[in-house]
Image (cartoon, rainbow, N blue to C red):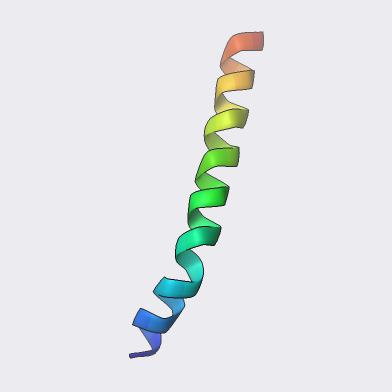
Length: 32
């Protein structure tokens, strides 16, 4: 039950982190 709760709270956070990570990877790839 606790895991499901954490999952719900983490979902938007994970999506944001994923977007930032993808953005950073994209930028690094572009610069490189």
